[in-house]
Image (cartoon, rainbow, N blue to C red; front, top):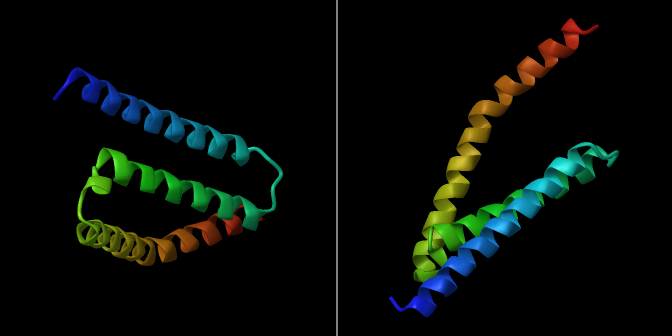
Length: 104
């Protein structure tokens, strides 16, 4: 690989890292803001989707793969995320209700 191509690829990684850092900082700052809960959750979900897309495209090199492989990986990630949510959310709701009952 030529030195110019190496410099270009490093620049891409650094830009991606800075974008991820900025998005994470915005998410942390928004945590202390008085936004309505629905807006807050919507903004966080949007930021997390952008971060996941950046990581998948640049660090997992999916933007250089055929579209079908990228779609298979994305579908697999969505199925895994949905499965984890379905398995974890009921227990989390139970724990949240127990904590609310304990504070009363």
